[in-house]
Structures are given as structure tokens and as C-alpha cells.
Amino acid sequence: MAVSGFEGFEKRLELHFFGDDPKNMGTLGLGLRLLDFDSIQEVLDEVQCTVVSAVANHYFDAYVLSESSLFVYPTKIIIKTCGTTQLLKSIPPLLRHASLDLGLTLSSCRYTRGNFIFPRAQPFPYTNFQNEVVYLEESLPAALCYRKASVMPSKTPSHAWHVFSASTQNTTCRFGDSDDDDLYTLEICMTELDRDLARNFFRRPGDDKNGDSAGKEMTELTGISQINPRALICDFAFDPCGYSMNGIDGDRHSTIHVTPEDGYSYASFECVGSVYDDREEVVRMLKKVVQVFRPATMSVSTTCASHEAWTRVAGALEPLGFKCRSCAADEFPAAGTVVYQTFVDRRSNNYNNKS
Image 1 (cartoon, rainbow, N blue to C red):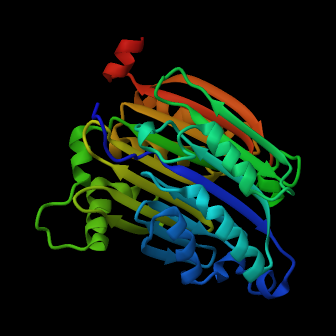
Image 2: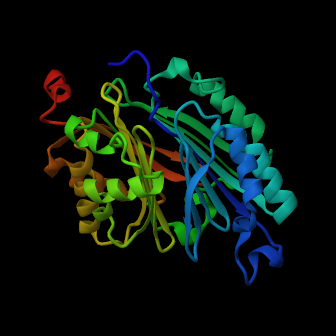
């Protein structure tokens, strides 16, 4: 294991808003999408990252960042950043712009992350989860009075899932929106990637490509384009290595981020699905993700108002040679049920050492 390196594990923040101003939420229905780019960059300056590529459709805007991704829906914003970024510093300017510029009010918040590979490199308050929770408590409006923080453990020592959720309502309904009750979010973290496959995420010296064109080449070469063939993909390759992509499929987003360096290789995959989707769709998607990266260890967090979505994950991964090492579940205000599972490849030394 390397002594130090780039932190692949992301911090993830999801904020939901509501508003009655017909100018913003009526016929146009744009809401947060009315934020101009200068306002967005002001928020990202606080986080210490910037936009490198972007794409949009009728439903939302997707930005690839220098450290991961940003998704802006009319009443929802998701920021996911890696490295030593200051993600939680985005909250005050976001709340200010949403309230003063758009007349929107925060209704719920969810913050999640895994275990950092290099925790000592993180700045305050990310040095421990207790500090992060205090920072969140102090940054959020008092109206979000239903709050819960928990560290969900696993039998894999290097993996745990940190969750903080707050809402104006004491309900397990997904962020209080009954229209989203059938949706679930998968947050997948993969470590110890196959070395040969990880090399696909290194730029060739002197390739004379920009980040966009090199990213498109990686998307095709690695098979990422086939994970969801319907998705419109916005991708970017970093120099000398690393890769990010956002996918847009109707009103659903997906995203992948890769830190391929040997010794601390990491990749993440996030997507949104519905409990009414074809069950085989999840199996096909996860199979393709595993084929792209072949990680030795995986953790999967499933967030849904329904309890059944997480069973599709184990059903998809175990036939691919992964053993479920642990499973934990908990309920959070507005977010619903969070199920955290860890998996180990039966062919890896990790599995052999723990069997």
C-alpha cells in the first residue's frame, strides 16, 4: 500500500428544495437550473474544484468537475467530490443563492462517504465523522429538525459507510417526494482494481489529445459506453491518469470516477434505478461494471424507500464471483432505507485471507 496518494473515495452531498414562486417553479419548472454559471463557480470555488465539461437535457444539468461531479435538477442538487476537497463549504452559498435568487427553501439534506484511504491527508472537518456532523448541524437551517447520523460498519476493516440525513419532515419517504418512492440510488465503491484494466485509464505520453477527446477514447476502449447504452455520456480524461464521466438517461443520472494508480486504485459507480425496472437490467449493468474494473473489493450502498432494491445487488454480484461479506441496514429521515453491503472477489487474496 502506498504511503500517500490521491484520495479516490468521494464525499457526496444531496440537497432538496421546494418553492412556491411561479416564476421559478411554474411553467418553466427550471428552479435551481436558473442558477447562472458564475454562481455555480462561486460555490465550487468554496469546494476547491472547477467545471471541466458539461452536458444537459430536458430534465437536469450534469457537470464533470476537476474532482468528480455536479448534478443540478430543478429542486435537487448533488455534488460529489474526491481528493481533499471542502465539499461541505458548498452549503452556505448554495442556500444563499437558492433563497435570495430563486425563492427556494431547503427541505432535506443527505451526506454520505466511505472510509478514506488516506484519512490523515484530509482537512478539517473531514478528519473524523463527528466533526463533519457538527459542521453539518451548524450549517443547516433549524427547520431541518429531524436529523440522524450513523456509521454503518462492515466485516471488511477498510470499509464503512458514513451517513447523515436531515429533513423538515419525520418520514422515511425518499426526501418527502412520493413521486420518487419507487426510485433507488446505488453508490458503489471499488478498490484494488485489476492492474491491466486500470492501465486503460492512463493517458499515452504525447497523445496530443485534450481531456474531452481522450475521455471519449477511454469510454469506448474500456467498455464504459456499454454499461448503459441509452445514456448520453459526458467524459473527461485527466493527465497523466484518471477518468470521470456523467451519464444522462432521461431524468436519471449515472457517474463513474477512476483513480487508477497502483497501490491505491479506486473506482466509483453511481446510478439511479426504479424498483419497477426489469430485474435483469441491474444484473446486466453490474456485470458490465465488474468487467470494466474487476475490483478485489466492492461496497454498495442502496438508498430507497422500498426495502427490496438491495436484494438485486447481491443477486447480481454473487454469480460474478463475489462473496457478500457483510450487510447492514438503517432508516434515515426522508432518505428512507440505506442498505450497506460489502463484497470480496473469491479469486482475490482478500477473500483467501478472510475465508
